Image 1 (tube, rainbow, N blue to C red):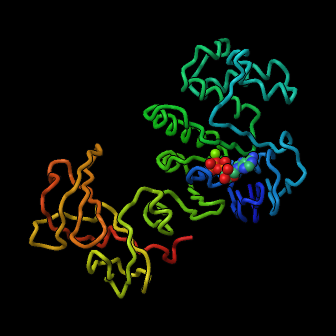
Image 2: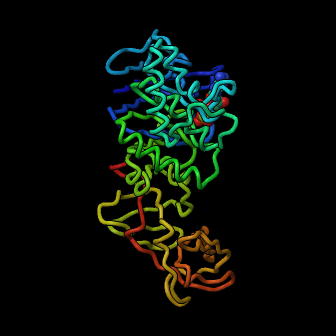
Image 3: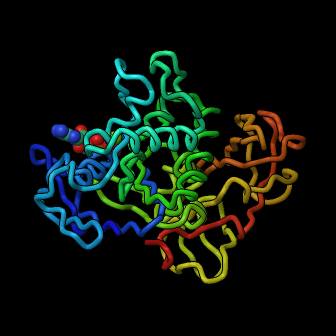
Length: 343
Ligand code: ADP
Ligand code: MG
């Protein structure tokens, strides 16, 4: 439904968006994930028509958007600082886009009521915006963006300012809501948890380019490269040389899954694949730190002459800092990065 071909934007000679190719299918929820400054907002602003392209093309439903002004693009954009109109009540905010489209009053009111139901604020139309909590304001902003029935809804860090537990709840509600409405969504966030919970497909950006695109599971299981792996929070990443089902690494010879790319490469060991055993077995390490993570304990390990390692241990059996342990590795949790299935 939405197609970007070689989308490029430069600011003062600096490239914010660098030849981005992206397709979003009807009813798909695509979440663009990346560090601050990687070009996420610029991407949304170009699609919205708020930022002209320096090169490349944009199509919505096959229509070339070149020269189409923002208000004729049928895209809804919701920013992080949702900027409700403080002098209008909730209903006035939700109906704003409908008024811009000269929708008749009765229809406006019916649509507003319907949307407030949808976002979990039934009957709130006459309430003042100032008396709403942050989460409620976020819902109003969402209802306002959805009201004109945009072909494509774009969200820029939509939950960025809310506290964590509210964000986690809203993201589940959003996904459910978009599914029920059949809304096509292009969202951006720097928060991987949010992206993974919301998206059908995650697009990871780095310096204005797409570093990887895939389902949340694909990206999580097979990061395309070291950048994506580290961005997702994986620290056990080293150079390795793979031969058959073994790899030479600074941590010794490690097992790798059948079919792994051969030769020199980069290897990721997920913390769950770092198994602790007694000090006489495997790679000898000293425990340097231990962090409670709710479902497990993250254990920081220092081998004698190799990069530090992180292990995920069950709550009951985690060793203490200063303990000497042995480490063995589980091939099922090892990924040779940059393999054929990465894009
Ligand atoms: P993100 O949303 O991923 O944090 P942005 O798209 O906002 O990234 O920015 C990408 C790059 O473009 C950054 O280096 C930023 O400083 C630059 N940039 C964004 N907007 C402008 C602008 N209006 N003028 C100049 N530089 C800009
Ligand atoms: Mg941004």
